[in-house]
Image 1 (cartoon, rainbow, N blue to C red):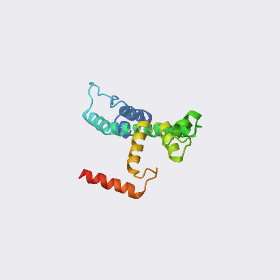
Image 2: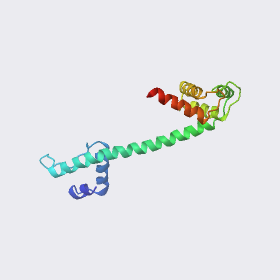
Image 3: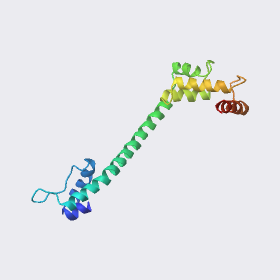
Length: 160
């Protein structure tokens, strides 16, 4: 803006318009040409440097603003989806995720909500459950430190 006001003798509003438009169009907005139709070297270099530095900064900030707005929208939609009451068919589905016992425990509820939100899929949940079963040596549905670290040491011994 200072450059446009000083060299071009533009009003501040026109200088601001030029500054934003030059960045938003990647430099398509040009300063005033000389009477012979050429662009003075000082003006050309100044606008080129301004655009080379300003366009990426402008684009980065525009992306950051868009990302922030989008994250807010996604968070709001997630809150709405989580607070949506569970239907009978959803309850039945959640009750059979880990154990088919017609109840939903805390872990099943969390997994169900992650599925509902699209944060995971059933195939991934099944892979995780298979991993749990591999750790659960006594098959009681609960992991002890011994089971976890014994499995880990067995894994590291097969790797070496």
